[in-house]
Image 1 (cartoon, rainbow, N blue to C red):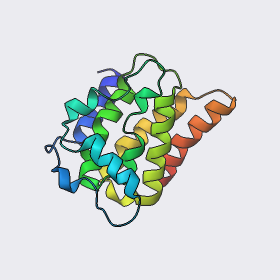
Image 2: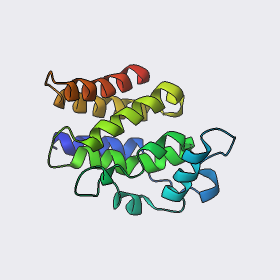
Image 3: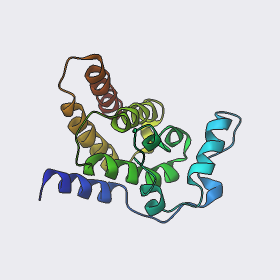
Image 4: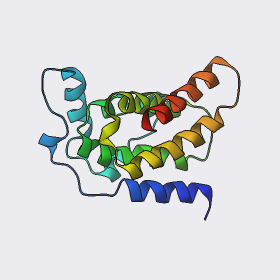
Length: 162
């Protein structure tokens, strides 16, 4: 089994498909982050993982491929566990290992989630996220600002999950 296949197996095991979360449960409207939560409902409500996977990382410049990344931060745990899987799968199955916008911003938002809500992840999910973060941080071997920041996002994720 290749390293990529091993990572995909880790993701499948740690983030099993328990069915599309009901639309009314993906965020809690509690007066905080209202605009982000409204955006998350528009982005995710009622969508299957397959539908989300079809939107993740799509676009000629990379910026269009950032669809849904910021909204992950406001999802309730069950919805986050469900919808994070296509993002992680995309991150580890890409044929080009460049330090692109998708990996950069997903690393940033995952680190923010872990910083504020690390307890929402199961031990298996934490191990999987740490493994993926180590892999992505290892790709950023340069000393330029982009590589340092890229590596920093994934190092921060690791720190908050261990």
